[in-house]
Image 1 (cartoon, rainbow, N blue to C red):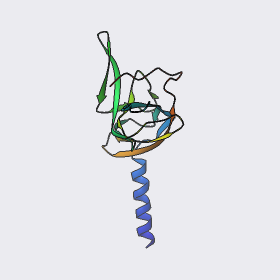
Image 2: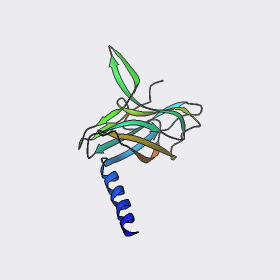
Image 3: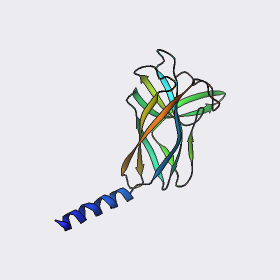
Image 4: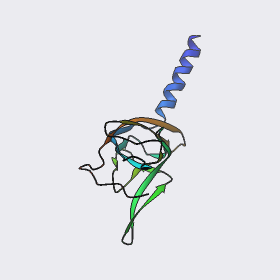
Length: 152
């Protein structure tokens, strides 16, 4: 029985050591007005090893995507990404006007003072995946870190 327990413990240690630690700093979601169907989530991410954010989800939205804002000519456009690389040791900022998590088809108004649960799924170079649970406070429509989200 002791050998079986030791083998189980070793398997757990090996599997948990396979993926990088991902630190999440200052997560937040932009508040919405009634009937608004989309908003953004923002944060700073730092991984101990190279990983890629490959998916996101939240119970407050029907669709959750990783997005980026880019200039095409003189027009700012938003588009979904298949993933977002987190290089080892380098902070990647998800912010208004840049990379962000887009919450689409909101199930209700997201109000200042609420907390939005988010799950990020990251994948290591070996293809193994891990989820990161985040509780992101909701901030007012206008903040010192950016203006309104563009229409989607």
